[in-house]
Length: 403
Image (cartoon, rainbow, N blue to C red; front, side):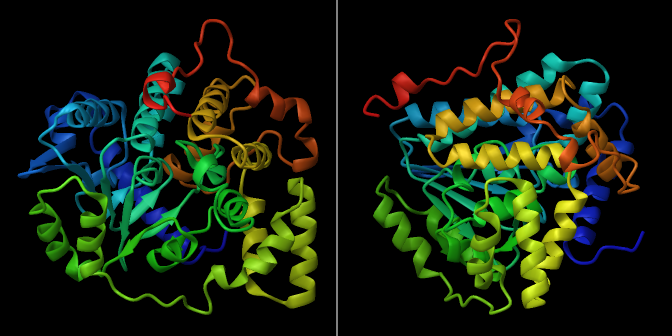
């Protein structure tokens, strides 16, 4: 197989590092440094707190201990009248590479489905807290920000990106679906950009995130220390004051003409269709008519993804367009649990194995083609969970009393 360039290579590097962190330590979970206090560190300031994701060897990939600690910290900070606002950042060269897929894969294979369920439940509950947080929130998305990493940060008030930010939702490529609130934030992007990002797993840089509204402030990585120092000294709970401080160090951004965002008309022509098959037909037509490289790349990405995941992901984003954050999370929770249960397919385990563990990058998807993915299979992912698995319960009555 030819070596894929750019993003694939970067993803391989992330993933290799990610996996090395595991293979080096077979009993990863039992190591002393996996103490939740070490995994999410806290910096106290006069009027604010910072949560620092601290698992740099695994690109700050999220496990249950990390999300449980984040949830506890955020709940206590929200109740503390001395804290005006909260900040989140990552240690090392990633903000957060998303959920720790390799650990989830290992748990599924060991039959520890309850532990996986607990992970998704805790993660989604935290995303919901973030999306309904009563205090201003600043997320510094410096470096790799994938999947669940975007989920725990994008629902907050301020999202600062840099020249080192790389954002993507590559879940369909590992036989999963964009989750942790992705069907909410992707479905609200301009036109059909969300469908494009969900199905191709293509990446955006910081400038592109500003341009499409995913981020609020752009700061060069070289100036981050100054920004953090400035924001750390603020004694306020006033969003406008925080916003002004972040803007002080902001840099002007110009979208590169080669950016995928310059292709929005073409994306809308192709990705507005009702089915994945029609999207692929439209892309093939577009590629033939325009000889535009983005179409060919998109087609290649779609052909690498799990056919079942593509159909599930498209439907999830489409439903997300008309749903609130809590409705999106409740639906994604069903899809995730149905997805790891292997009721319909083992694509999640197959995808993680092929891309992150064995790394032969040749997953054997089941079913192997789009035409073999029936409507019933897709419906199964969206259907209520069996009695033994409770649905996701979110505290909407207490957190959204005016909705």
